[in-house]
Length: 101
Image (tube, rainbow, N blue to C red; front, side, top):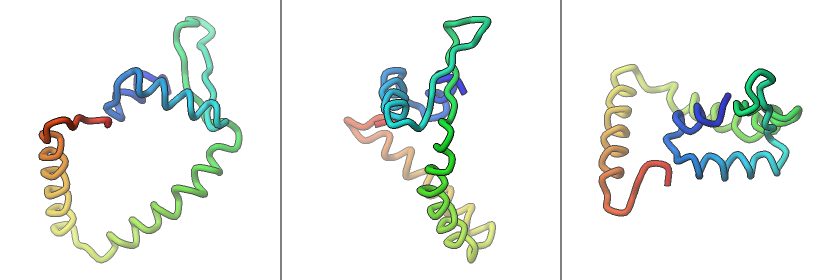
């Protein structure tokens, strides 16, 4: 994935993505790979053991989310999503706050 796509998906500034990618690279989680045909194009790749490290951390969280949502029907989840979306929109309007902070 190119950093520009990551920036768009996360809604962050270019500087914030660069700082994040720099930290992940220094920690050994990702590596930058330049395209052969156009050296200006950079792609981000997981480092060899990064997927296992990510799963160790995030898989229990994903399992907890699945368990928590298992007892809710589609209507309840729709209402919860509507509430969380409205909350997110309202928080984005709070003075001094912005997406990606």
